[in-house]
Structure formats: C-alpha cells, structure tokens
Length: 172
Image 1: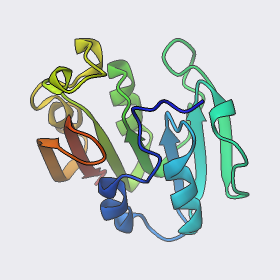
Image 2 (image 1 turned 180 degrees about the vertical axis):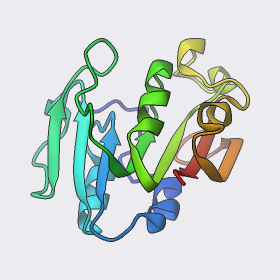
Image 3 (image 1 turned 90 degrees about the vertical axis):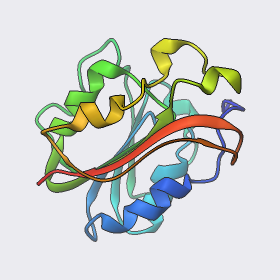
C-alpha cells in the first residue's frame, strides 16, 4: 500500500528538469515506490530502471521499466559498474548513497533530486533528523562532482506543506 504522505502525481521539479535528459536515455528511479516517475519517464521514451526495497508497490510496470527489488541501504549497490544518463530521486534520503549516485552518472548525465529538509518536522513526517537534509547539504554532496544547474531550499504548499531541498545537476 502506498504511503499517504507521498503524492502519486509526478513532482513538478522532476517534470521541469527531465527535459535535460537526452532522448532515449537510460534513467534510474531510486526508491521508486509505486513508480510515478518511472511511468512518466517511460511515457517520454526513456529506458527506465526502478529500484525499491518493496517492488510490490510498483504494480503493472510499463514495458520500458525494469523494476528491481533491492535494499540499497543495507545490501550492495545493485548497479555496480553501471552508468545512467539520468538519476531521479524524490522523497528519499540515505546519505551514504549520495556519492554512489553522483558516481553512477554518465558524462552529461543529470541528477534530479528532491527530498525533505530540516524544518519539515513542523509539518509532520518525516521529522527524524536522519531523514532531513541540513541547510546546503544537497549542494555539498555534489560539490566538485557535478555542475549545479538549479537548487532550491524552501517550504512548499503543494502537494502538502513541506520543507524541501531540490537540485538538478549535470556531470560534465
């Protein structure tokens, strides 16, 4: 069953920046859940890999989507040695994975990331600091590795009030 805290519509941030992904690209959707972004990306003609610790959330994936069930927090990185033209991450934070993600981008590849930030505790879950980015933390995670194209650290009201950080960055 889907988590009620996560909207099923694709993120406007992902929709805005996915236009930078080259046509026909290989895209990884991390912590894909029910597959809202994987489905969108597949409709746009991308070849998509979607990984989540509970693949049962992703019912009836489109033909262009490879769904993999893997615990990327305690198990090995299931895409070792593989590079992607784009990686999309929303509503998910596992800090040790950040360098793995930046290292898994092809030259010219795009990282589109959006998740909760400190201050979100006043709006509800997540409220545990382990799952909330510190000010500038997402920028620091890509410093010297990717060129930042856009970054925001703000409070949003839609789909529900939340403190978020969002980043779009390219591997040169």
